[in-house]
Length: 410
Ligand SMILES: Cc1cc2nc3c(=O)[nH]c(=O)nc-3n(C[C@H](O)[C@H](O)[C@H](O)COP(=O)(O)OP(=O)(O)OC[C@H]3O[C@@H](n4cnc5c(N)ncnc54)[C@H](O)[C@@H]3O)c2cc1C
Image (cartoon, rainbow, N blue to C red):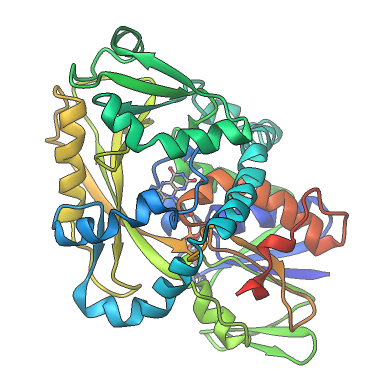
């Protein structure tokens, strides 16, 4: 059985590793090599408390205000607006109260498994030291700010995710560098972070090849199929005969899915990070400040500051002013942060309008599968996705009902 996995981000690499372990002969194809896409520079967080649909009212009501603010957390490039309309209409459709309840349950079902699955994968591959033991702090200046984020906490309570509200003294004891402006915080102990998400992909890719898997650096440009998937066509002219194909090309999956007759409403939510090598402070926990829409994570190479969403498509050049805004905000929380020695990066979050990923067999072609659209949570969902896709592709009983994650749900 030859199984081709297209895309060696964290999703494709974790799936390739799982399938190779289950006895498939797997070829993992990526045009740039493992881990150079969104999985390179994300915020490293196993963010199990962040599964809420982006289409909930407390978020979308703020969108018009954000759009008018050049430093706001969401930016749509004016030239890209017309192309975004169909995606945005689906996003609005996903904001109906009954739909929101379903989407919350679907995200929570994945997040409930995410930390145990990640820890199991790390143990199995000898990478358990790559994750921190500390949780994440969600910051608020005062009660009013906390109340504005109350729906987030209520959803976590409904689904039983651990959290603890703490006051100024406890905050200072956990993270002495945090500003006195922060009057209240919520500690999410299960929300842990990786030391370096890129290294994690490389290490998994290494384990995959040690199990007999093969990595090909090539671009997939087409397919040959009838009722079954038959061949994968590469840019260099080669054609690989295949028994099975899994599409996990991140934000680029839509192009491949359209060629396969299964268009999906997948957009890129472009995000930025600033990696600060000598920040002048040290931190144990990652922090999120919902009202300022940024995150800071202590990583192996210093401190990483990131966040923001920019809708501008796959081809537009990065606008690093977005990264500078998040550093400016991070300094409000961390007044001693020094940002002299840094690098900036932009990546494409593969975003579906209803926030839950596609984990699915093709509705049209036998032997074809999709695992994409992990949005803001690709690192979080990777180990669980790999297990579920491993079960789905090999015909084992899925450990979660995958009906809500079907490709033909739109
Ligand atoms: C700023 C930022 C912060 C984030 N923070 C977090 C976080 O803290 N926690 C979290 O869980 N998630 C986070 N995410 C989201 C997470 O990074 C993504 O969901 C995840 O990396 C997606 O993984 P992927 O494997 O699907 O895609 P990618 O990592 O983008 O990989 C797709 C791969 O497909 C390849 N490819 C594409 N087309 C082809 C083709 N035709 N032929 C061959 N190869 C192809 C690309 O080269 C690429 O390597 C963040 C994202 C960003 C941008």
